[in-house]
Length: 476
Image (cartoon, rainbow, N blue to C red; front, side, top):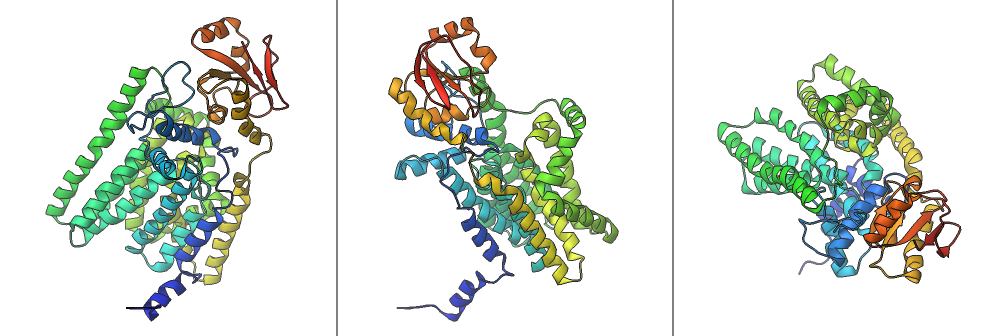
């Protein structure tokens, strides 16, 4: 029986503490981002987006665990079943809840694990075509990009792109090395799960085009057949099943994009916010400066392969931008899929620097800039924490099956924390007594007026069942 570690084992462990080994940084910042991992999804940035994920996960546990029928809590008198992204992340939260009991923060942990593994596959993928230093720099830049915070949010964006990147790694293995069942199977499974989880990640599929030139005819045909087979369930889910759920159950929630010309016009009209997604949200200021410098060097040095990757990726991503329009310019997570390509171009700028100290300086500045700008996303405002009291207050005046109305506008976050189902509306709508009477006929039993977070105070002419500094519960 072998006891202890061999020299080879020791070197593997030692590598994890080597500052020039990307695994050290991935592991280090995996643990750093575990800070406040159990916090509820109440941080300022995109709490609404996270709670729509947790709603579906909790409903799988409490209502119906059929993965094809996800449901939200703010559909009023309806069932809440609606079209949304394929709920893989939501379902993983549900599966963990079966074992450990329900907790929303499982989604943070699952996403962080998958996204960290995705970064390592990104490193391995680049290392096939460039040296280790280039791969390290690109992955380090991506680590501190928009991925840094979104990889610990209960959202499928970095989750889905990570799966597709891992699929790209095995797909490139199949096309450029000796074909194997393992490589094409893993490519198929990982890419399929990634594309189902978040459709915009599909733009990365265009990167297989330059790889096709490196494979023989038989590999190309089999891979093309595999890709078609893989894309079929994605197309069926998003272009048949999602509209079917929306129409059949009468509640529209999922944004499937708009006419591309309309989207382009919206991006142009809102050009400042559109550009901000690239120069501020994606890689931050320093990273974006390196990205521009990298583009200059790529053209000057005529680096054809990376230019192919950047050009094809950019053209493909423009489709995502034009379909999203205003939504792209106002939600920073839409730039997540493009950040890996920007990181590669920025890393090329570093590869042209002869001074290793200069490279280290830029990497250090990128890390510090990112940490300084993103630290607030690891904290929750005190006012928002009042949402944790909603469920208890409502339980004191009624039961969980009674429907409520919240003045949170179009933000569903408070509905999730109320652990109730019902409607969300603006103050002006709630003042309409005719509307309230209609909702009472549909089962409305309580109106919750949020005074500070997610709403503003509104005095109603109904009996008060509960009152605090943060919210009031009325019985209409």
